[in-house]
Image (tube, rainbow, N blue to C red; front, top):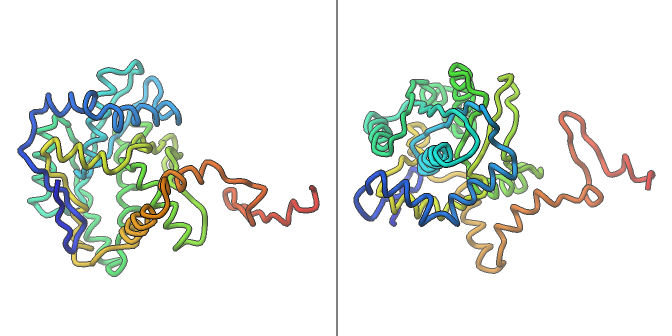
Length: 288
């Protein structure tokens, strides 16, 4: 596997031709059972992400994560015991025509029946947040997917955030936000009643996603952003580099960061927030 790391996002360039669909699907259950399939199933069970009768909108950006997630859901629907429906939503925020066609071709090869719709978000973001587009773009894209999921009568929206996204988000908040927050495996949509966001790839490491996509021969989209394409890097890539450096001297650093969000000691922190209500350790100090 090789990548192109230019002014946009790093891109996976597979080493060979596209594998037949049957081989790709078999590899998910067989060759990548330990590092991908089992961890997908584990997240669903551990966090109770899917229930009988769910109608799940699967967000398809065309990148490596969402492509794999779509195939994982199809395999779970085929082999799992819980019955649920799937709707594959592919939003076009303003991709170059060649990028849009690549997304469509990949989904056709992988037998992912996408519902593609136009949003024009890239144009809006370019006007409103030209210098720092990524945050606004992410929020608008999610809101658009929520709305479209509701149109299709879905009660859940699945996004392809993985293990490393969780770790990097935690570190971004600590180093740049001055708070301790992580990316949750599921949460209820604030502005869309009855809709829940789920992240079933929560335990899957990015390295194995890259390996699987490379094996498949699929050319996934990178971020494909027409607004930020000329900007070099962003804070998330800085965090990726930082964690890579930390791994050289601290064994298991990624696991430690991930587990830290499960092991917060309320007796040993200065303050915390629940909704809009803030608390200080001093509020409870004299009660001990």
